[in-house]
Image 1 (spheres, rainbow, N blue to C red):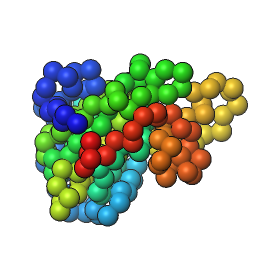
Image 2 (image 1 turned 90 degrees about the horizontal axis):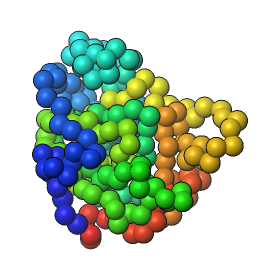
Image 3 (image 1 turned 30 degrees about the vertical axis):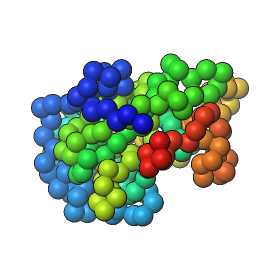
Image 4 (image 1 turned 135 degrees about the vertical axis):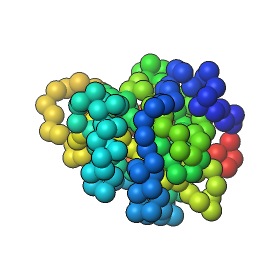
Length: 210
């Protein structure tokens, strides 16, 4: 599978590189205070980061005054498994290089996204990127298995917390697995086995094979 750079023109459909936002203190806490498991772990809002003056300034710069949460996704991963989207952009920043597997919400047809349309983008360590709201994404993939990944995840406040009660018969709500989190699972994933709706067709991409 071809791995693009976030500086390549292909990334412009999915997101952008963010410049001019200070992140040195955020990266320091991310590196020193967040665990790197063998699998993956996700924390929606990590107080040692979100309480930093630098995070408060970034919140204004990235979300224009709308409350944001500063969490992280850490670990080891090389597979697609699922794709998700939100009603807001997501901002990512890694202590090491990492890879994002991305699709486009516009390419969901009849309730399914064909994984053959997935593109991979490598994000350099210390580079802040915005992943647009219409970009399908999920857990990062590591570049170096010895290092894993530690990736900042900045979203609108409350995203990925408890799923709200819903009454609408809208079919899209069958993908809703948490607040502001629409998830398309591959049938081979643990998420699908746990009850998430299958919304990916094709190969469950594995960067070690594909």
